[in-house]
Image 1 (spheres, helix red, strand yellow):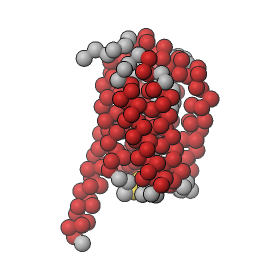
Image 2: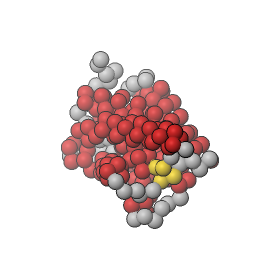
Image 3: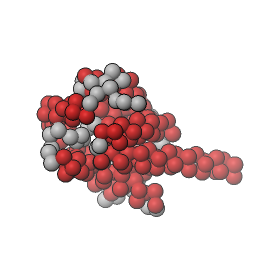
Length: 216
């Protein structure tokens, strides 16, 4: 199915977004990098602050990207904005208000994959800048795809996070991944991998909980 906008319109949109909002985008990147480094160094940041950061990512993408900019070229962006607002609200509810999400730099294969996804999301602007030889007219940070990859990595590291937190990131990994293949954003090839990894991790954890209950 063809997209309701051209490739030129898509990148013009990012030029407008980056030019108007770059200070806030830089602050969001610095906060994300700082939290990631602290978690990697085993100096666990407050779980509530990590959840608040993830909520900020999703709400920012919902309002600043989807509602303010993407709706100019795609009416479906209003639906996407609603989905992203739901995800941000879930992080506020489960992670900040109820403190049901805990993050830890655990070991194992899944942890290695999680950290690769987190590192990739932080390098996402650099990867796109290298492809397009510009820092302006590209998907940089604070937009849906790096937000989804970053979230997938942190949710894989999370202990006993509610499964519903994974639903919207998995859905966006399909939507964003399919659109990216049509628009030629090479950095987004990791998006479906992030969604698949998050889905597999959620299924694995569910199985382990079922096994634990049956043995109790």
